[in-house]
Amino acid sequence: EALGALGSEAAEPYVRDLVLRLRDAEEEEAVSCAAAAALGRLGPAAAATCVSELAACLGDQRETVRQVVQASLSAAGEVAIEHITRCLGDSRVEVRRAAAAALGETGSSS
Image 1 (cartoon, rainbow, N blue to C red):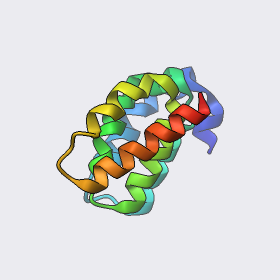
Image 2: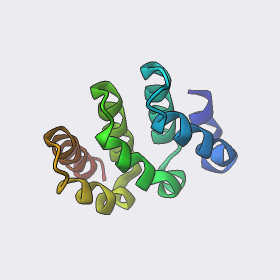
Image 3: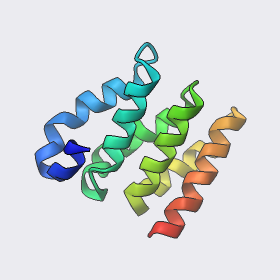
Image 4: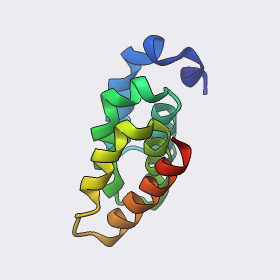
């Protein structure tokens, strides 16, 4: 929560570490979820720098991580739509489901 309160410019140096923690399948689920949530709270400007990494995590094996990533992408706003849309063609139904939900939430929040 503190990182989100810093704002996008001050938090920028931490974005890469958050993305690494999010994408690490060996990381504890709670840590990956916290990283995804923090990225979502950085605001649309910061989200633009990591939205493709977030979208890639819609395919995470952990359902809770996918749900938090979905919410973070929705918070990113219109900048995330193209990346989320690409996930609609994924062969895994859970990825398509998460992408569709994220698109719906993005549309309602922008």
